[in-house]
Image 1: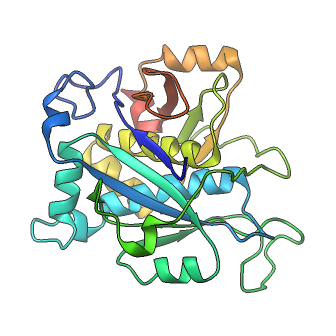
Image 2 (image 1 turned 90 degrees about the vertical axis):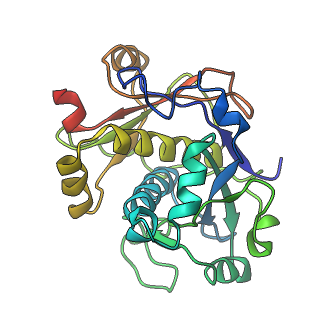
Length: 265
């Protein structure tokens, strides 16, 4: 496998029946299929921490979804984003380093930098900590129409970890909870975190979206205990269910999107 691809059938258990994430909408499969590419920078000798990569990927998806180039009627990315959301919501995460990363940066897109570790240019922000994660998100492309700068990039065989256990998340902030019963590659988990962030975004009201964006899309990605996971999946919060084309069984619940505004609902 040369990429981590999620053919998504994500939905909100509490969402409206008109939700575009409902897997029952089979006409979505008949539409032209697009994919949202994300590229994570993984230098061979200095990979980022797993949690920082997950959180940065999720924030990258939110930044693209809220960017005027995607939201304005005449935005340069608007047509591609609409086509992507009219079909299956697919995200593919690939890795790049060195010249590959620099070439990826020449394409239209948005690069997000994580919050932990030192910088790749040699600056220190955390002693001997891993470098801050860097993720570049691109406007959607046709499933079989990847740019040549990205098409050969891979993510298989890459495993990330956390040198230390992540801190307890802010109970007043958004948290994307990952299923503790499922093992996923780093790329697959990043795609799932992006799904969770997108699902939360779709469920929020306009004012709640604006507030989240103005704050810089703070969020945490954590793995709860099995007992807490059972509570979360029964809480009415949005749930990501994967179509099961790669790594996990069809219908697997992978992420619960926990946002303060959604808890109040």
